[in-house]
Amino acid sequence: MKQYLDLLQHVLDHGTERLDRTGTGTVGVFGYQMRFDLGKGFPLLTTKKLHLRSIIYELLWFLRGETNIQYLHDHKVSIWDEWADENGDLGPVYGSQWRSWPDGKGGGIDQIANVVEQIKANPYSRRLMVTAWNPAEIEEMALPPCHCLFQFYVEPPQAAQQGVKGSEKGVTRSERTNVSVDNFDASKADNDTIVSSLPFTSSHSPSLQEEAPKGRLSCQLYQRSADIFLGVPFNIASYALLTMMMAQVCGLEPGDFVHTFGDAHIYKNHLDQVRLQLTREPRPLPTMKINPAVKDIFGFQYEDFTLENYDPHPHIRGEVSV
Image (cartoon, rainbow, N blue to C red):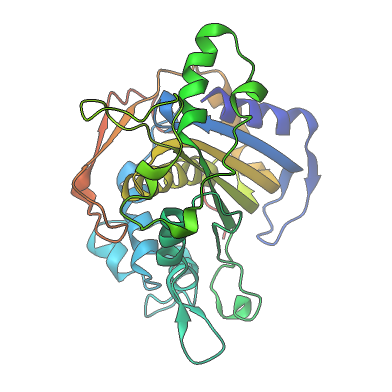
């Protein structure tokens, strides 16, 4: 997770001090990007221990379309408590926007279900997007969405295959990704055969004994506001896991998670913790195993995820600014 430590150091070196909504004060920058290859391990921070249970249950809560914290409490997760009202309600936050964005006609748009179908039916679309930023409902939300927009991108199978072969032969990335798909009409393929219908690296289709190559699914998140010490490690793991889940149900391999920031800041009451974290050497990334039997994005349960070989440094406590 050197990418994350580089972000911390960049903000310490180049950040400016600003007042903020919470009154705590921040040191931050505007505009930054990190990239994580999900084929090289699950990007769960190792320079401090993270509570994976909270990360998984929060993501499942989003996918359920829920906006009351009772589900989280039922599973001993309290990360949203500071923002909930006396009834546990948060207003139309992430889950509501992801699963039932108002369509202006009295109904709702299920953005998650839609994007799954779009990935299967038209994988090279440039419209594989989900947004949580709904200007009409911002004032009704206990906390407007910080991670507010994400987009998926499918890399063709032969590009992924050439990436492996190219690295062995010294082929450049630009050469590897110069792929023609002019003869492939994804809109005419049915959902169950879309991946096997994609073009292959070699001039022949694989035999019955060969496993058909898969495309790679990547995700880019735009986060308008980022609490780098407390929030960002959770966000990285959450969207990395979402990308892996989406890839599995769409018959693809996980690609990259790209994390793009607007206002990326360290709260002033976290500066000592950040400096401590920067003294710690990153350890090898763990591996996330997902139950391969789950083929429905809404069918995942907590028990479907197994983290292996996670060996983090001790937890570093920090106060949340509300």
